[in-house]
Length: 124
Image (cartoon, rainbow, N blue to C red; front, side, top):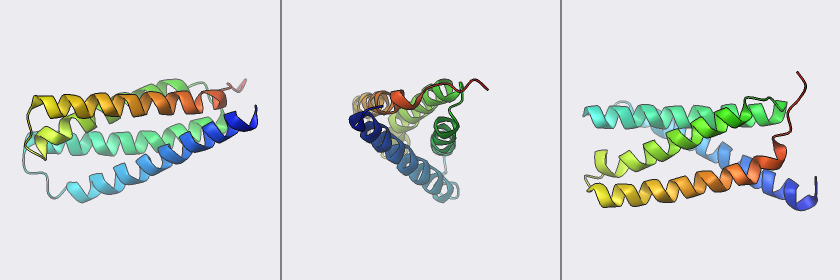
């Protein structure tokens, strides 16, 4: 793996760790504040994408074959959670929520691209 690929993977892993930390801590803080069903669902999704981000890093380090499905599940949870948040917590309309979801999906895609060199599968 070239130095650029290693740097790319390091940035992707750093982003996953940041999202994992902020997703878990933010979700735990929101648990008591979630008043509506939408807010509770968004909080749950935030906890899911935070936990999945940490699991993805573990799968990448251990070079497991389930790193890619975990990464795709993380991307879906991140996009859904981020797209729903402007409506449930911000009271915005559908258009800002769609814009947020598209922007977050782009960040998730960039993360998938960044960590792709580290997805060499271990024989175990």
